[in-house]
Image (cartoon, rainbow, N blue to C red; front, side, top):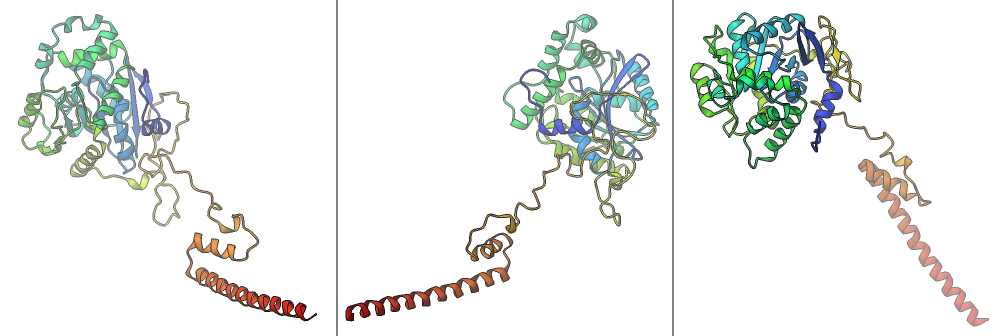
Length: 402
């Protein structure tokens, strides 16, 4: 990350647990995360123009812990829509994935629709968020598209970032924007130029063989970079699709409203028949196994996966995947002796061990014993006082007579 942006703690934890894969396929370099049981048909996440595979880290952590497999990819340098379809199909072949469920946002939603149109047998369902059906609007707004390949990187980044609505945002939306801006800084000039070319290239989505009932449209109702008219076109094209509107969330609801997005994704996957395998998630106790980890499937490795280069991190990735605490680092357990009254400093008073034990353990029997001990000591002191006073009185009288 560059500049003054501070990465969220859950993202740092995600990077320490989930490896980033890099594989060359032909002339294309693919970067992706793959996490969750390998026997489950994957949900593949496609980002928008400003996104990377990292922007879906909240979905990867949450859904994989529920027994779903999630793959998040960077859009490689492809310069037209046919090239995208062919390159993405080769990528699926290399990672040995045949039937997929696609979740695309903005440009990623448009590319998901194109792939579903041209490769209908591979796409089993779609989740579309702030998507569009054609590129005419973006081509008209970018008359300099023919020279985008020669445009300096800083101008491309500035153009992409100006597309994000400015102004005061709610804190969670502002945080999501900051995260994506930091991701834009990691993109090369070729990455940005190719994505802008894809969004301005003359193309539109044709009829799909996929039933509307297998499509979920998950749009935000507040201001975002995709005009409402374009989002309405998607809803009109697929009238039988399931609606999952989010009241607010901006351009990046997967970051700003992760709980709502994750819930809608789980509902969609259940509705289209994807069976989660929570029993294969490492760290979740199985029935009758005495709390042992589930075997097979979890994590980013596994059989049938191509050899690749993993991103170097300061913390070595855990091959067993995240813990069962929904993507949060495990809490440091307190010492077993921290509340043991036998290890507390005690004085000479025999009452103190009983009172301390009563304080920490709150046992009624201990309290009763301490009360009885206290009363016994009180009466002893009481009678000792009277005996002492009587002895002093007698001694004083004796001295008077002597």
